[in-house]
Image: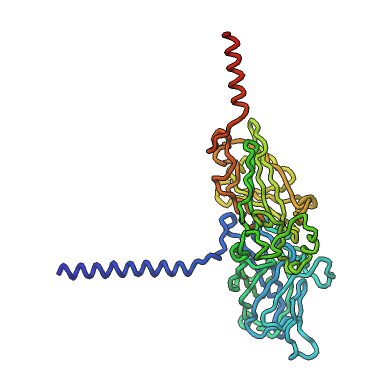
Length: 456
């Protein structure tokens, strides 16, 4: 009887091990490296809302609105590009506030020709200055959308579309699928369209509510892994108490190798710089960076500048090494434990981010409008800078072990490469390398001479 029990126990153990292995494998397939979760903005996304506002003889008229609910990630020029696939044989009769990039094959239509007959249309925003009869509210910004914190009024973009060869009731309409959003390149993954409660609209006189015939939402989230293969920014450090300047890590954003990849970077004193900037990659916005050891388009430098009795001061400098890009509406997100005691910031805007309840250690910084909100291309003017004044908290403040340097920095929503902690500038009296000062032997000799003269 005992051997049978042992055999049954062994079978149960094997079955349990198999079940655990199966669950583990399923979890591996369920979570990929492109899952878009940002710990500093866990609920950030771009929501695309379709409101069917009226029915037509062969379809419907809808207002499509994009909301950028991301706290610090925006869409800069050349703007967003939205695409989808029709469920049936729908066509776009007309659009207001946007246009498709291609018309497609509309040869089956006689007389009144649709705006677009493609199965998978691609839509772009109209440019500023568009005639008023082709505009609707929140359109015509060239596809530029600000972040929700910087400017919520300009974090919205809309257009109107008249769809034909489609359903004419809530039960016959088929939702578009395979949504794509480029801003302007890859990085966003969009989910499936989901029918939600119809949107309500308040009339201009604010005395009457109207309602959409039908509404569906699409949610798009960002992943830096999808956006680019390599990082786009790095961080360098320095301090008043140590002469060492910790540069960005070597090859942080790629390695300089003009032998195997000619034209990957250009020297600032190159006589052919102008022709290289306007070369073949200009139309695709391919970065052309200045040749550096880190090869990053953007560098953020954090310098611990001064130490007062009750305060300490930091200088932040953002430098653009990309000859083909002007960064409009740029922003910086910095994580440091002393931000709960930030006293003054000069020439930047500031907003506290609190991704964790009760913990104020993250700040968003961005430029002042019409002053330094534009980070121009690489060159003498390709930088912006500001200073931050912190009040010391005696229970936590120290210059030891790199405490004065940031834990994490984001530029335009992308995580920047930090130097390794063991490379941070050390206090002279705590440096692992013995620092011999010329002053110390001089003082020793002087004191010895005084002692000899006194007792001579």
